[in-house]
Image 1 (cartoon, one colour):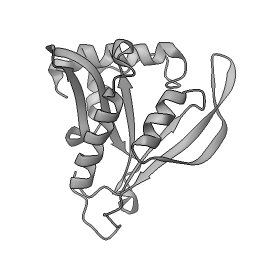
Image 2: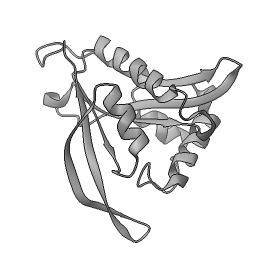
Image 3: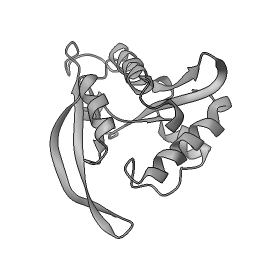
Length: 166
């Protein structure tokens, strides 16, 4: 993911927001905020082979904390353009994110998903994520309380003693 993908990435984010089941956010951040808060080595886009400038989806992650004990734990997001959903784009992106985080020594990838987002839950399960809990009534969205399922994927090969390289 580069600055050249900015408009497409933010447009896809906006589509996800509009569904009401992807995030508590009501607007995407500015590109400057987006790039400042996501780890540069773990931001990916899927491009359409028929039109290589067309972004089909994206994934990115952020550290969960600046405390050293959490150096190998990130939180991720994955968004797919509505026209590309159901074609394996999300899985492709998650597999690429998993590969890059494994290579960097990151041992846990986590995320929060609304229970109603069944497609996202199925995709995450297919990529080795598991639901570790429900955060009940975590936040209000459009006047109603929403639960969030807490998902994680633990690396089968990396332990906490391995070095993390951002």
